[in-house]
Length: 177
Image (cartoon, rainbow, N blue to C red; front, side, top):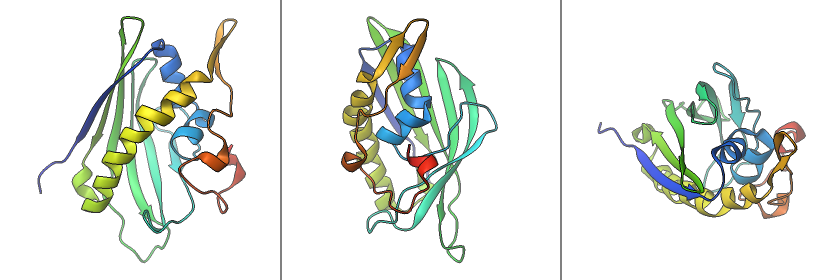
């Protein structure tokens, strides 16, 4: 089967350290992407989890951090797993983020590899979804990434729970934040 890869490039008018925090802080990720238990540590296994939906089904995503080079590069595996163990698992994909300073901001190169491992309708939804998340939601979260003295922190509340792209009635609170 032909190798399918989604490549996107986005510019954000924020320093690489702020963009890095927005894509690695689990609270920020929960607002613009999905509830998770992410840690930016090579080898850390984590999960993205939302409620079952008609469009996305009864799946969750299991991941493993493959590369961490703050604030330049992040890579992790992405395996869509059915909640029902009788259903087949999909082969893992890889998601990578490369941040490069550009003028007064950051160029973010996003790559999602091995999309041939999932059904075509999911690939179409991912193309639309990743673009929407990067262009709209991540930008909202970046507004809440602030300098506090010598630290950069995320202030939750950029995207209230009721306005996020997913539902979380069955998701443990520690993943939702």
